[in-house]
Every structure is written in structure tokens, then in C-alpha cells.
Length: 257
Ligand code: SAM
Image 1 (cartoon, rainbow, N blue to C red):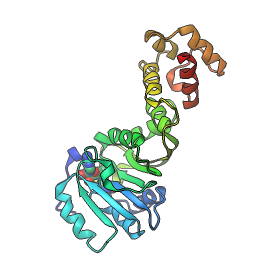
Image 2: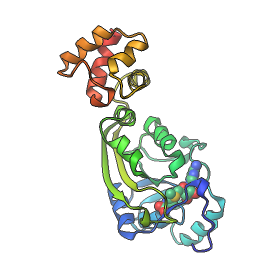
Image 3: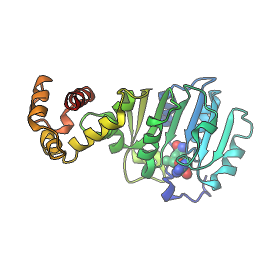
Image 4: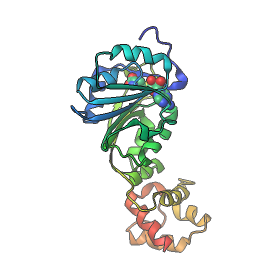
């Protein structure tokens, strides 16, 4: 890949640490016969391992300069299908993915949240999704205290922070650390997921302020919020980051009555 002209605007930082490539594919539990969708195969380092495991791989790469290299590298593999497209513009139904396909990708950092949002909400549900993201963003999805964690919990029953990857595991080296993250049990966990998230977003609007004040500013009854927080064993002065997903669903349902 020495001759490749890395495109910063496409988030082209290729994973070069072989052990981490294996750990990434292992995290997605990719086995023979699995139907796998890979976003942004790049030079094919991750695709190679998936293909060796005899999974059926569909890879979507936006950079047309990488297409001949990838086709050449995997010419002998009948289980490889390459699509030159923008993952955000594709009609996912046309990819012919089996129910329960596995999704994997070292994502371009500038659009990683858009991609995750798309696949959290799509009706064609993957069995799991494993991504490499900027470490801070992966932490926001995986750990309590951030809006992104509640968003992820609204659409996935299990989110695991697998491993931090230092910058020197990539070529060219990004300025930030990365991490492997896994989403499982995909599907909405609340009957009106978008209304719930709109409500939670208001509570997070000034994250350092107490959440009852943020919600009261948007017209909710402050005393009622405080009483519901107390019923759940929480302080009436709680900040949005202190509540878990289950608290949000209870609070939303109580206030919407
Ligand atoms: N999979 C390789 C690896 O692990 O080393 C490359 C990962 S690199 C971080 C991101 C890849 O996504 C690049 O190959 C880039 O060209 C591709 N890409 C960027 N935007 C894309 C988009 N909208 N749709 C599909 N691929 C995209």
C-alpha cells in the first residue's frame, strides 16, 4: 500500500497491528458461513481475516482508487463482494444481507456517529456490530453519563467497550487513540424510542445543571420530576449523566401520563 495516497477527508488511517486486527474480527465472532458487512475495507487488512474464516463478505468502500487493489488482492475468493459506494447513501435493502448478519468496520472518524445512528435504527437488524472509533466517542457510547450511551441503550441491549488501540497501531498515525466497541441485542427497547430520546436530550441540554431545571425550562413540572427521582431512590438534584437507561424510561413514562 506504499503507493496509496491516503485521504484524510475519508478518515484513512489503516489498522496495521496484526494482533488487533485478529481481536477485532474475534470481537465480532465471525465464523464460517456468517454473512458479514464491512464498512470501509481500506487496504483489506480486516477483510482478509474475515475471508480466511470463510464468511460471506460484502465490503463497501467509497474510495474508487482502492477498488482495483482490493479486487486484485481477493481475486481468488468467491465469498467476497465489493461495492464502491458511500455507506450513508446506499439502499441497505439492496445489499441482500441475511437476517442476523454481522457488521464490522474501522470507521472514518468524521462520520462514525452518523454510521452508528443509521445501523442502530435500521429495520434490517445485524446480530452484532463491531466498530473501531475514536476512543472518546467509544467511551461515550459504552459508559453511563453521556447522551450517546442512552441513545445506544435505546436501540441495543448490550454495549461493550472491548479494547483501547494506541495511535501507533494505525498508518498514518491519527492524533487520537481509538477503541474497539461492540453493540449486541439490536432493536428498539422502548415503544417510542425517538420521543424518549428527545426528552433525554432536553435533560442533557446543560449537562452540568440539575436535570429537573433543564426539563422545567422546556415546560415539564419541576416538582413532579423531583418526586419521580426520589421514588427511584435518586437525588432530586440529579444531573442527567447520573441516570441509567431504566431511570429515563421510568421518568419519561411518569411525566407523559
Ligand atoms: N478497514 C481498514 C482498516 O481497518 O485498516 C480501513 C479503515 S479507515 C479508518 C476507513 C475506511 O473507510 C477508508 O478505507 C475510507 O476510504 C472508507 N470510507 C470513508 N468514508 C466512507 C463512506 N462514506 N462509505 C464507505 N467507506 C468509507
